[in-house]
Length: 233
Image (cartoon, rainbow, N blue to C red; front, side, top):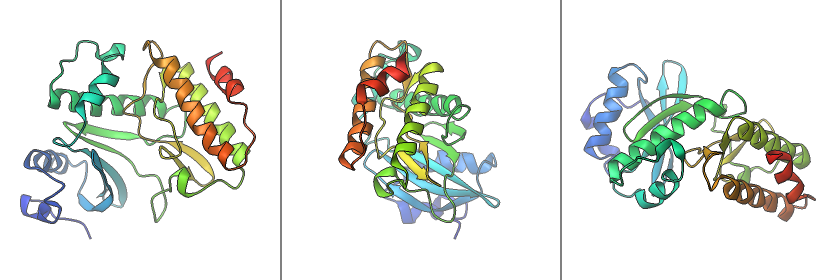
């Protein structure tokens, strides 16, 4: 059931939405990006994922929590990204840039790999494509692929395409990859950074080690060094 417009409609989520976020969501409604909210997909410490709708279209709304976000960690990732070198360390400015960064990274990645299409962003809220059918596509950790070698190879191919386009995911794991119709979909790209970031190669190695270890633990033989070389060469 869609939540109607108006501040009173958000009382059910009073522990999730602050007044500033409510106003931001209402702006998306007034600008016709969404008609209303359906309900939560995931409630987290730093970000909440809600399902919204626009007509018959499902839309994902990612809301960063203004008070509980670890903006110091966000700032640590942002300050090494050449795109944000002049960013001041102020909570809201950092969070808003974090959201902008995820939008930019998704917009670039969606053109070359399986990743949600971003629709719009404002302040601490990001709207993007819903991935799934009747239910949201599961995380890789919850649905191991039937053909793990093919799935792993696709992950490495996607990481290579991102690298060639100038990006490193920087938070790649079984939690940030969806298994949709037995094919990977990269999500959570707020940490994704430019390959000109002086930490980019470290992030790439960490990404591939983490995702490779997941498959290794599940019985797949993986050459981690060869995978990293395949991406960066």
